[in-house]
Amino acid sequence: MNRKHMLVIVGLVVIGVMVSGAQSGRAADTPLLIVTNLYEPFVFPPDADLKGMDYEVTEAVFQQLNIPIEIKIYPWKRCLVMMQAQAADGILDAGINEERKTYLFFPEEPLSKSSLVMFYHKDHPITVNTPEDLKQYRIGTQLGYLYPQNIADMLIRREDVNTIEQNFQKLEANRIDLMLEDRVVGLYKLAAFKGRDQLAVAELPMPLLNTYYLGFAKKAGYDELAVKFSRALVEFKQTPAYHDILVKYGQVK
Image (cartoon, rainbow, N blue to C red; front, top):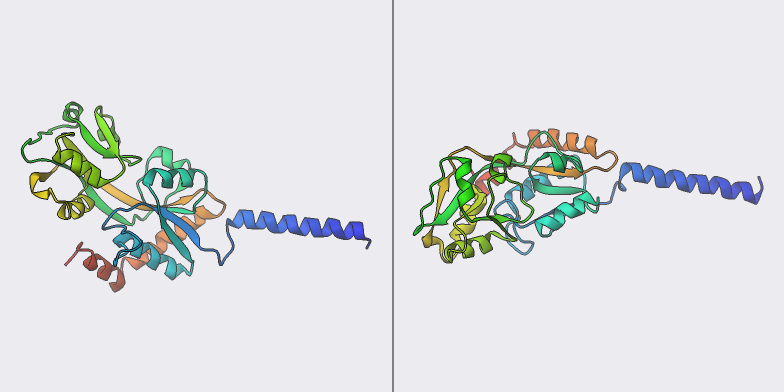
């Protein structure tokens, strides 16, 4: 075999390895990069004593699967952009809609569920009997967050911010009329807010459930990974370890 033929063979082998690596999406010992934002008590800051309920559940399930992961925290809008660009492997606590299905694989089993509620200033009670009633109000929402379509269509005077605290501040100052937020997250954040005594929470007249998933990038083989994760998550939810996590974050007694 001459040198030229040898170079051709070596080149083909290198290309084959590159294609194989592209199809698998990552080396076996390379951690999956999972992005999310601060969403206490589901996800806590990196320097906090606690990690967060969904954070810990995700870690535990991947440990069962023997797959290393790395979770990094960014603003939510940036997380979505990273997933669209396939710059990350997964996104923690994402809701499902048709647009997100174009760039994410979703497991069947959600990480957690919670209801959507409204917060308002006690001096300015709000009456909402139908989704249509929301049109008249200045409503605080979060940038990049997913709201049920029948609600999103009524947010004519929607005002996006980056954090829940910013919405609480605007509500306290009467710069918005109400804010829409996940019940678990909103009540947790309200307990630490200085002006909490001025604010109140109420159920929306239409039951709205927030369902949170670990979305996977549409990389080769990640549809199968989503299925494996879903099955492992279902199994983990039957264990004492899962119950202990719920107790730690006040979801059950």
